[in-house]
Structure formats: structure tokens, C-alpha cells
Length: 299
Image (cartoon, rainbow, N blue to C red; front, side):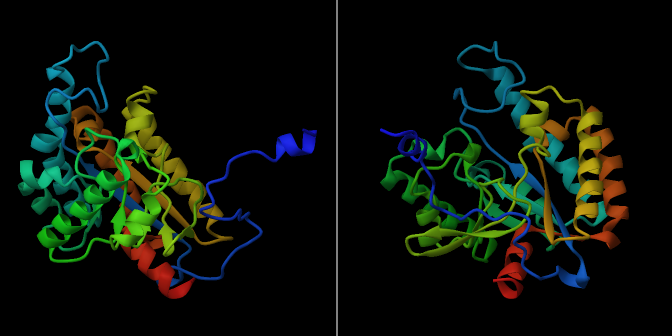
């Protein structure tokens, strides 16, 4: 085998083509703005006794009361304080939700969407399992169940999907398209929306953050609340500067069991107040609104 043949053997996902900054579509967000910002709140529920899940301690035993109860604090306490904060600052919440929340604490989901300004986004049935480890039939049944239950509960078809743990199989985009989802948040490869190829048509990809995201930043990497909040403001400042030349999306991802903790919440409420006070500079919205506007104006 020649060097050229050996170098050509890299696998490719086949979902999208390369697009550099020299390729730009001419469109604007509402109000002729060039930056769209959304804040995602992940409502998650875990099976008791399961080893899966973000961990404040890796030394817990198999039953893992420590980590389970730490995460449950988000649904019992932290999530309620965060919902009040979003209401007070008039921030439209993007609620990324396990369907198991409907079985465990639907009151929390009702509270988050009570203003009528938020969006409900599917997030698998539970973060106790990784979607990419399911066989084809089980994955399809799980995706179909999430669409059915969340749409019936909300009275509106759910458009968006984020896999638990960003875990995909090779068939996930096809299954999402076939089950009526119009966009995915799984990929973090760009600051702009883009189309994914599937066997049955296109699936829109909306940018989702993997560093302006409290789980990877705070839990495994040990970033402090103060530093994470400064990351949010630094990201906003730079994205606003870049948006003078192109139309962009900035996401912020939060979890109630992390930033619902009082010492982190204290920093977050000041940071989100700062962000909200600058809303005249960008479009503060939800991924679904971004997807709809992009599909109507840029595709």
C-alpha cells in the first residue's frame, strides 16, 4: 500500500461537508441581529442504584446514595430557584428534558414552562443509559416514546433532540428524522446551524456547547463557579465581536444539581443579570426558534 493509499483510509461520518469561514450564507436573526443566544437547562432523572451519571465523588459504593442524592437536589431544590431566576430576568428557558421527569417530578417541568416563553427539548428517557449502546430497535422505540410522551404532555410536537451523554449510534440521525424531530443538538462542530444528511432527508444541527457547559467544565475539570461564569461573559464578548462579520449561535448549558447549589447560584445570578442587561445586542431565544428562523430564511 502506498503512502497516499494509507492516508486515505480515515473514516468519515458522511453527515455534512466541510465548511470554512469563507463560506457564509447571508441572513440575519430577528431585529437584524447577528448573534443568537440560548440558555439550556437540563432536567435529568436517574435510576437509583445505577452507576451512570455525573459524580461529585468517584469513591461511592455500588448503591451510590451520595451521587444520586446530590443530583436529586437539582430536581428538589436547585431547579426551582433557577426557574425563578429565569422568570425574574425574562430569559426564555430551553428545557432539555428526560421523559422520566414526567414520572418523577412533572411539577418541576410545569414550573419551568409556566411562563409560556420556553421550549421543551427531548433528552432521551433517562441519563442512566447511553443511547449509542442500544440496539437499533430499542433506540428507535426510545426515540419514538420520547416524541410521543413529551408532545402529548405539552400539546405541541417536540422539534429538538439532545442524546443523553451525547451518545449516538450510526443510525441516530435517521431515527430522529423518522420520528419527527427537525433538529439535533448533539454536535458541537460549528457556531452556525447546518444541515445533516440522512437517508430520508435533512436534519438541522443547532450548535450546542461542550465547554460553556457546567458538567464537563465543573465536574471532571474542577472549574470554579466564578471562573465558569467569567467564561460565559468572555464567550459572549468574543462572539459579539465575531458576529459583526457573520451570523452566529451561542449556547450555554446548565444543570440544576450543579448551578442550583447556593454558592454557584450566587455567581450565576449576577452573570445572567449581566447577560440579560445586554440583550439589545443579540437575540435571546431558544434553539427551536433559531431552527425555525434559519429554515425560513437561510435554507
